[in-house]
Length: 238
Image (cartoon, rainbow, N blue to C red; front, side, top):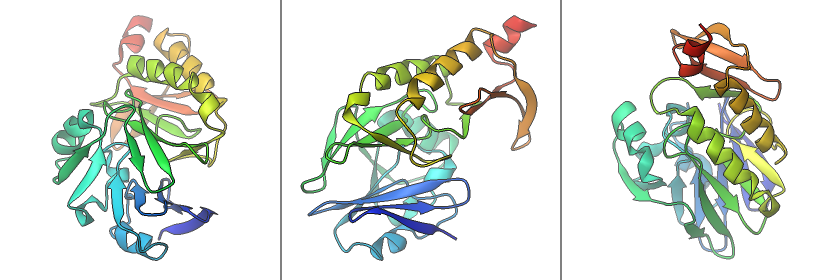
């Protein structure tokens, strides 16, 4: 069951087991950021808190973020995520493309799109400019960061984080989809440095299994990176 938590008069977070999604409202429009993992009626859930015209934006297309997409005829997503949404996930629906730097205006509340490829090709974050909050999806969190399987790329992830670090003067708090909420912008360079250590073969991964797939789990203190066992850095160490 989803648990609603009020952040302020125009912002709510909805907690499921292990993942969360968000509702943001302005003066004229409302936006769901992701649509849940087990919640099949995110639109209905949101209607308990707003009667404004409601749209959906997906930070990316992993299955724990798109459960209620079927409730919407169309939804905002970065087009680079099509390989994940239509290909890997075999989902349907019409994508409304958003690109890095695009702005969605909810009415006296502007949301800027920030591309963060790496966790998936089309991963994005949403910057709530007036409230100085970043809704980061999966790339910035202190939980388990999935970097194994198709659509993941650690080098791109590192570049995304270092670029995001240059923007930290624009936000005070980060609201991730997993782990603690909120977290500090200081986490961003820590995650980038940890990912670089993994790429350089300077971190020790432990054998683990997720969804029946053997992986390497790197506990870096601030987060755990779940990576392919046959990744290039694993091969170099052998």
